[in-house]
Image (cartoon, rainbow, N blue to C red; front, side, top):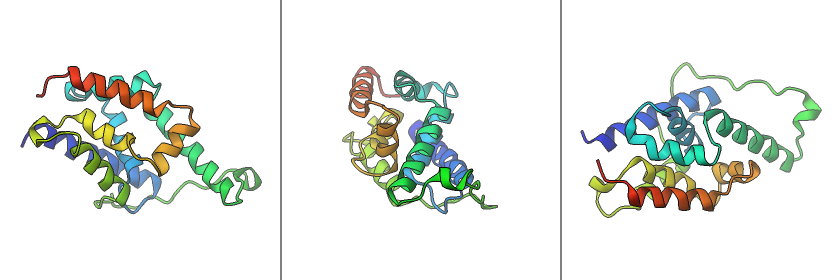
Amino acid sequence: MAPIDHYINTIIERGADEAREDGSAVIEARHLLLGMATLRDADTRDAVVHEALASAGLDHRAIREALDKEYEHSLGAAGVSPATFGHLPEPSRSPERPSQLGASAKLALERGFSCVARKKDLRPGHLLLGVLRAEAGTVPRALTLAGIDREGLMERLQRALAQETPA
């Protein structure tokens, strides 16, 4: 198995853990992003990912806070104010981790794969680009609400990938 295959498996596994914590039945792009953030300093293969996220002030906690803010904002758009109900209950955690990828995760991976012509050129940063390139959905809304310059982050990531040599 190629190093990128191990990385993909790892972020999907970490994403499954995040989805379980969220009470989600499937792994979505937001879970993959959180999974990528948990790999900080765990492996040199993800150094570009870690540096890109850090350049925007995004670690696991900051991403989680942005996602929580997006959730509250979405509730507000539907006319539900968390302040009205006080503290919302924690999501119910399934005893089993989800194993299926949701639509946003599948699209994020497809966008990441499409960054390169050949699989052997695929690197972890391309998978982060796949998540960041979503034009609609939870991740772009969360990053916007958190004041993250998504375009700037993607440009920095693309520059770093251009300078990186494939493993």
